[in-house]
Image (cartoon, rainbow, N blue to C red; front, side, top):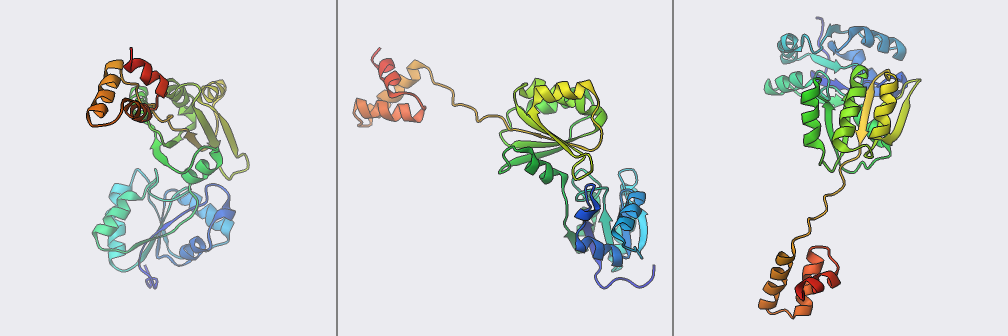
Length: 282
């Protein structure tokens, strides 16, 4: 393999989503010195290196879903010997719905240092472009492929109040949007982000019902990220009249005047004081 690089360990590289100009200086530097570069698609890596005018002196190996179980121990052996291994996927950060987690876990278990040259992420890019709240969000990756499992997952997510970020394959996006609209309602705000950072980048900010109809009319192409608004905060259920009367009576028994007890109960249940007064005196 030749002389090992000065800094051994695993380096996770954040690759451009589409536009090579988004590549960081550190990504270039690591590619130029790593002893081994493990790539999800070696042809795409070669093309990226050419676009960046970077020569990769290290050994290039493939590391993708089909071979990661077999290749992980081989790469850990290389890392344990003190060499530097760089991991790069087709776009974005390794481990985020892409190969990487298995190797990171194995490297850490072997006592190998793991670091990152962070870069673009489809998750945060789509979130920022969506126009939907970004302060709290939930990343769900790819939805299940089979209709039954997908609908069950969406039913479980229907009351999630955080903004949701999902990945979906172009040939499944129409069915996924139809199921999303059925589970969350046609009016739930959403954004379909397609071909981020590429020539034909498109962000459709529309309710789920509109997006489902739009996708059904013609299969969208390219890499797709869906951002869906969270469910509205559940309104507190109004207690029945007997419960309200009992709550007022309990406060009176504790020493409050009826007026203050009614005011306190109305505030607790977000009701008008006049309505609680009417119920108590019915």
